[in-house]
Length: 96
Image (tube, rainbow, N blue to C red; front, side, top):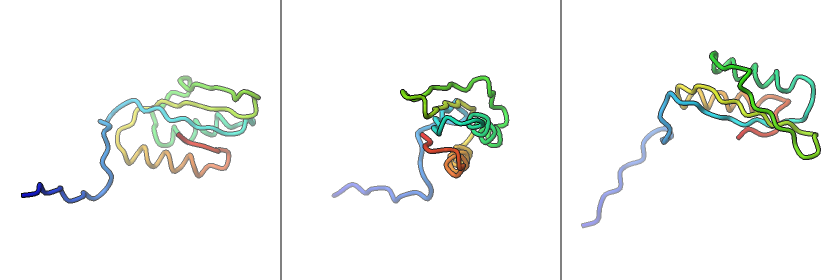
């Protein structure tokens, strides 16, 4: 007799256990206000986020800036909302 496959569950499953420190990388053009705008969005979704912890890296030619923001994630819904807010921001090119 064949083994039964469990029915798919509603929603998305994750292997991440919350709360946890969650790094998110945000890339955009190297323009005035980019880092501040990204930090502002992150702080809206993760109020305890420390702006001093942001890691910055320039592209090889210096035209783009990558920011790594590690925040305390409390749920998948929080991570998803932050990702959506960052990708919708006009200064942001890529979010990983």
